[in-house]
Image (cartoon, rainbow, N blue to C red; front, side):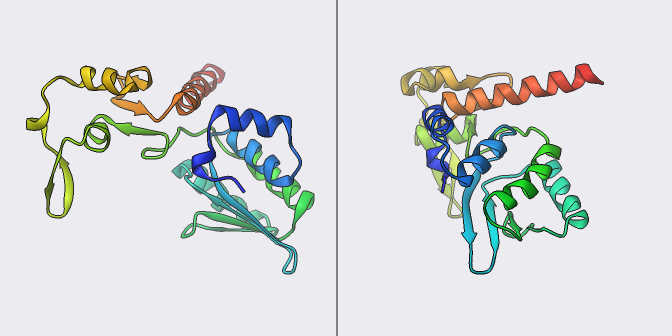
Length: 190
């Protein structure tokens, strides 16, 4: 099983070197398209495999939903953000591989792979006040500009000012850059 806190370059490279399970194959195939898996469950007794996604873009959600209409071997739950494949092991992998091939590269998700400038100031720098039981940015607590706080916390290397995004780490920044590259490749094909 692979969970959100396990997503980094070191773990991904380690899995590539030591693929010993179908779970690792799922993980790596979906990861090529920036689709992050929360967990994989194999139920041998009832002969199904369930894959929970941490995030799916609307485009990929629609593609999976439409694919289920044509494929009797799996079911997509929009509510649970998961796929149930009516097979296990390599047979399940073969069914889902067809679907993975038709999915698009997606960007890393907000709150998982990156945060906004405002979220950074609230969550990392603790510049907030409580209004209606919710943390809201309180700029009066800031003594310096955003750049200063980014540098002080080490997040300056993960900041893309044009996008107003701060990535969680180098892994997610790289995944975002891969997504942007895929967009430019797709545009040049058109």
